[in-house]
Length: 219
Image (tube, rainbow, N blue to C red):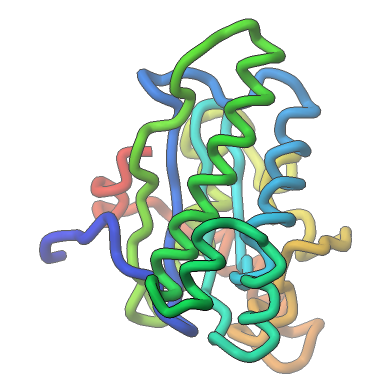
């Protein structure tokens, strides 16, 4: 693998692995409600502009597999509805889509940190300053990343089985519904028939093994 660009620019219809961790190893999620609050903020600030294909929230870091929604008239209206200085600059042509999306992530992290710090009676930064977003250019890397994200709690020895971890998207593919997850888009990667697709999805995860490619993740 060549040199990794950890801060790739966001482009329409391109897949990314997005991840970040607590500063100095700080836990990001102390209580059950913290995981739900973070996902609620994701739904409000990030979901309108991204297709979320997979995610996993760990105590001191998180992973998301996403693709950027094309810049349609509907998305432009969503940007306008954000009512931020960056949304106004986007509509005036001062900044591009990438700069607006980066700012949405800053809003996600700052709003979550504000609530978390109040809960914990702490001050200062909570997240590492620059969240990483690695462009996934091939189908193999996208599929590998899908399983890697779901495998994270097993890799870190929190659980032994995929479905034992409550804070990932894995169970939403099998027995739950999610407003965040683009479930059908992911299952289409495996088969157009839903039963066959789900079987292939599960088999793919059962056979998954972390390889040297993950060394660049640091998570």
